[in-house]
Length: 212
Ligand code: ADP
Ligand code: MG
Image (cartoon, rainbow, N blue to C red; front, side, top):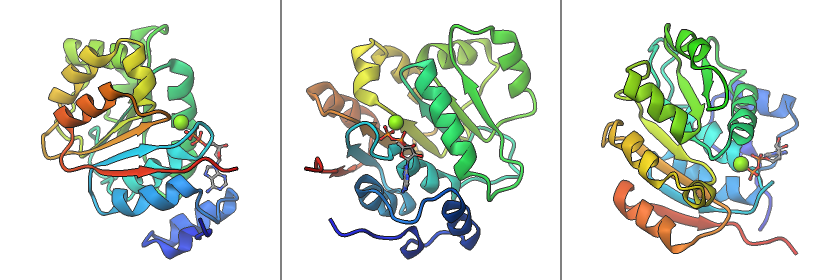
C-alpha cells in the first residue's frame, strides 16, 4: 500500500499541525483504510494486528465530531482491560491537543469508584473504560449515555473472550440508536460477526494486510 499523508484528509488545519508535532505524517495502513469511513460517519469493522495504529484510526475521526460546549459523553470507547483503556485515553489526549477543554475520563474496575463519580460530575466529552465498571456507573446513575454519537468497541475479540458480551449489550442499549458504531479487532472470529449484526448498521469492513 502506498503511503498517504494525514494532510490528504479533510481534517482541521490545527489537527494536521498537532499530528506533525507528535511525529505523525503518514497514515498507517489501517488508518488509511478506516479514517475515510469514520469521517463519513459510517459504521466500521476494522481488523489489524496490535501496534498498527488503531487508536488514531478511530480517535482522529471521533474528535472531529465533538461539541466542546456540550458537557456530556459524546464518545464512548470500550476496552478489555484497565491497561488498554489507560493507553487509549493517553493517546486520545495527545490527539485532542488541538482542541481546548476536551475532558477525557477513564472508568475501569480495580480502582475506587468515588473519585470516578467526582470526575463525571461536571460532564466529560469522552469516556474510555472497561465494560464492567461502565455498567456499574450506568446502574448507579452516575453516567448517562444518551448523548453518545460515536461508540468504539476496541479489541472487540478480547472483550468477547473475557466474557463481556452481556455487559457490552447493556451498555450499547443505553446509547442512542442513531450512534456511529466502530468495531476494532486484531482477529475476526464468528462471535464478532454476531456482535456486529446486533449493533451495527451496514458496516464497512476493512482489513490491514500483514506487512512482510
Ligand atoms: P494498536 O491499537 O493497533 O495496537 P496503537 O494505536 O496503540 O496501535 O499505536 C501503536 C503505536 O504507533 C503508538 O506508539 C502510536 O503512537 C504509534 N502511531 C500510531 N499511528 C502513527 C502514525 N500515523 N505515525 C507514527 N506513529 C504512529
Ligand atoms: Mg489498540
